[in-house]
Image 1 (spheres, rainbow, N blue to C red):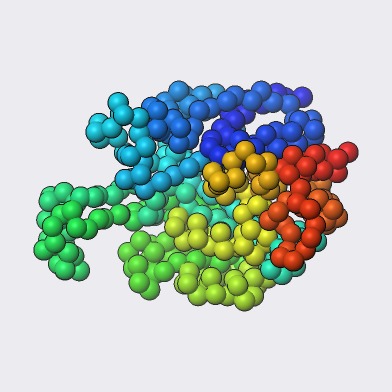
Image 2 (cartoon, rainbow, N blue to C red; image 1 turned 90 degrees about the vertical axis):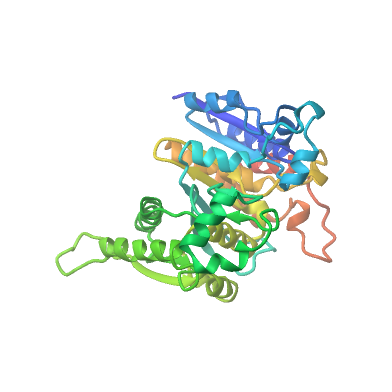
Length: 388
């Protein structure tokens, strides 16, 4: 049996606890791996001025995949204030390490499945089975931002856009600019990934979420690319062996409304970075919340798997949060590595625990129910029992 090298980046807060729970499940299912710890998170920003140290980046180059827990992120002013005294005033700028990771290693696919497991009392409706494909390296999260705004940038914007005129007269520290940048290549590859997933898993359509009616340049490019690409997945009279995948498009705001009203009308959704982030959290809310929301960040050669929840520092060390999202993220890693039997076993065990309903963390217990909440450790151990 192959022995894998797996990067292990628990990060901050509850990231440590949920990663420990997932590790126990991976051990129980017989996954053969060497786990390589990587430093990442708020403490390394505070003490070193870098939340994603170069030594951790170097570790990635010799890994088969990685599991990431959670990190704490704060606004620029708070980040500066919490730096160690000797690091203050050196021009250090905090940037989310997971965003940097996605860009450094070209993890352009963010895959977020949202499934309503039977028996989960927090399901909005039974039978929901959604997958959100979020472009992961471009868009509004590309990191091209200005505050205060350099005069040269303001002058160029005024030259090329009349819409900038109302801001041009303001002092340069009275407004900020965040750039939204989308490329045709970036749009094409995330949309193709969504269509290929629909083909492989038997979904009949792909929904392209956008706001091209207002954000005309970047969202317009995304929608135009989708319409061109969709033609490759439409069967003609002569294409007897080809899958026939329909494409529909929807404004992101309208789509969010319809997801809340008729979620079972949707299967595979693809969107630019910010809109995919928003839609995937909405979809997570339909299937029990972030305690069930797993995620994969995938490139052509490497992948990082994580829960989508934050570090929840108020709950750190309490052994109370739901580890299922991280356990399912580990299951996604096994799928990506080709360890299909192990992945299926873990998902079946999780589904059984949810359906049995005897062990539930606090977020799985409806208001007014007197069931005693299980701990993070309890949930991991119960999943392990179900494996056996």
